[in-house]
Each structure stands twice: as C-alpha cells, then as structure tokens.
Image (cartoon, rainbow, N blue to C red; front, top):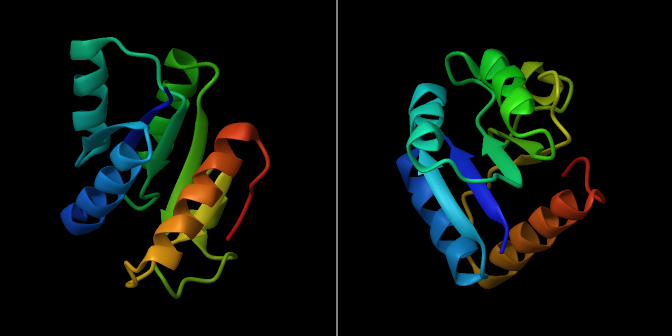
Length: 129
C-alpha cells in the first residue's frame, strides 16, 4: 500500500481527494499545513511514497526540502488552482516531480483521471496535467 501525504488548507479538496485515495487502496494522510504535516510524521513515523501539496502554503519550499531529507524516496506533486498557467510560481516549486490543476468537477471521469495521474506520479510517468 502506498502512503500519500496530502497537504492543503482547502479542506473540501483534501476531504474529497483523501476519500478518493482511501477508496482506491491508498493510505491518505491529510494535513492542513506544512507544520501539521511534519508534526503528523513525527508522531506516526511512517514511510511516505507521495506528497501532494498546495505550493502556496506558508513554508512550502522549506517543507519540500525537509521532506526530501526525511523521505528520500518520496515523490512530490503540486496541486495548482484550476486556471493557473503552468508558468506561474506554483508549478516551479523546487523539487516537484509533477503538478496537476484542481478541478471543480467531482464526477466519476474526474475521479478516474486523478487516480490515473497519481498512479503515474508514483510510477515516475507523470509530470504535468
């Protein structure tokens, strides 16, 4: 089972994605901030395979650096606002393996798209969407 750390202050999105990941057999670990994520990992000491984060959270760049030191094999995915161009700041956070835009859709096709993309990131085959 892959452990996915989901770091985003958007609780609606975090709940939706966490529920989707859990239903697909992933272990989703939600955190509202970088500080909360580090505190969670200090408490449960678990291996993280993928970190999905909002690159605009306070301390996001430092968080990625810290996580890369603590979780050497983890992959990192930034989740950008729905209409942000890839050339804007969030898509270029250092150390990010892939990025994906949030969507206001929650239908089955969107769910399948997210799961396929996340599987690709975990296997090293996805970089943008």
